[in-house]
Amino acid sequence: MDPQQPQQPQVPASPLPPAPQPMPMPMPNPLTPNPAGVPGGGPQSPMGPSAQQAPATGESDKDYLTAWLLSYFLGSFGADRFYMGETGLGIAKLLTLGGCGIWALVDWIMIMTGSRKDKQGRPLANRQKNFKTSVIILIVSIAISIVLNILSFALTYDSSKSNSSSTSSFQ
Image 1: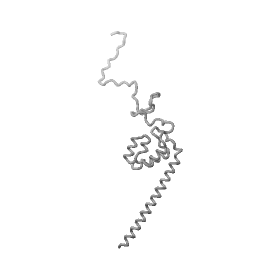
Image 2: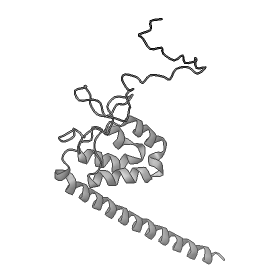
Image 3: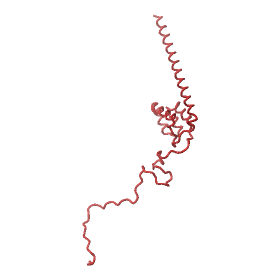
Image 4: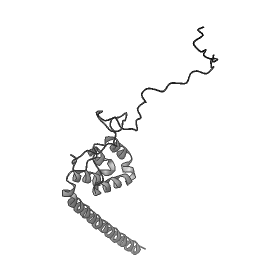
């Protein structure tokens, strides 16, 4: 032993393993955005960029009137969802018959009000131009429905009245 160097105290060996050292780079968190400059940007997802990204700019290639008509007449079968490019939701809507009509009604109202967007988050094309047409179609179809219901009631009431008078004459 060298007399000029101080002696280090002897520490007995610990039965516990040494504490883990911090990792030099943290693991990526799927809920945090990608660093700038990474292709695809936005939140990470195993399925690619998610819907939380900023919506695409511009108008959709899907037409408002077509989506509205499909939703109005075939919404219970998911035709509007298929048209908008949402095949999985279209199949689900088809299998549930439009969520027993509720899902179909909600989708139709969302398209009518303009809050329904295409798969990329863009507003449907030509909504301003075709909104008046969709309202006219709605009013005409409601009027036709009312007239048909009145005729159905009148024919049913008339036939039931004539059946009751004919049965009473045979007694």
